[in-house]
Amino acid sequence: MKPRVLTVANQKGGVGKTTTAINLGTALAAIGERVLLIDLDPQGNASTGLGISARSRQLSAYDVLTGEATIAEAAHVTDVPRVSVVPATMDLLGSEITLAAEKNRTHRLKDAIDALEKLPGGSPYSYILVDCPPSLNLLTINAMTAAQGIIVPLQCEFFALEGLSQLLKTVDQVRSSVNPELEIHGVVLTMFDPRNNLAGQVIKDVRQFLGTKVFETVIPRNVRVSEAPSYGKPVLLYDLKCAGSQAYLKLASEVIQRERLMQAAE
Image 1: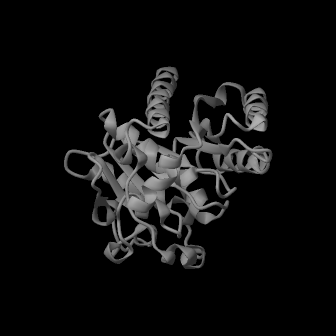
Image 2: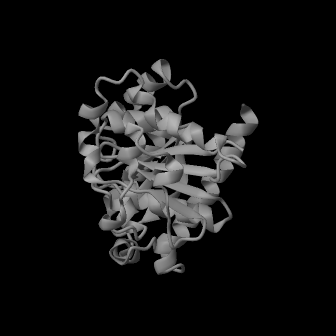
Image 3: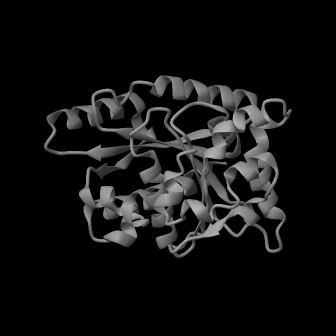
């Protein structure tokens, strides 16, 4: 079966993008999916958050994009059952220069993912999540070209919608030029603090602006979610019962439900 490829993207930093990629992937695995996380952010926080040390990243997403390695060769099995990761290194910072002269530079990740289906038994993954850098560069375009859908984390703060129009414009450009299948899978509101009166108004505004594209699940601001990466663990392994873990499990169920509705409509 062809894996579903979802890109987690927002060019605005600090919105919980990597946290969402790690914990959504873990939650999907917890309900039986086989998940690969591809870390395209040169900072490599998703790789660290899944317990992959910098010194063990001999092969990385950079090697996959440049054709030096396949995904199967670069993927690391993590301590999270049914979750693997293609880690990031700082080499990704030079990928735009390295790939600038290549004709298929926007399709490098898609080609690598498509190659998984040629493995004996087909792709070992049912879901592939791509964690993007906080910018609309060639790495993000590669992720969008490879994906069927985009998940956009938005922080429940005043400037939540700032920059979203540019992201939506980029999605339209990718759809019209290289990937007509690309859709906004959903917008997930993150870092919600019920003590902040403005947060409720932000949620109302975002839902009014984006309608059903916004997931019902809202990810709360939660200390356990913030602590987990320092232990190299997703929050579901760090503290399953905390509010953040429960929210990501609900989000995973909602993602799968939307996937089924999309596939039924195809």
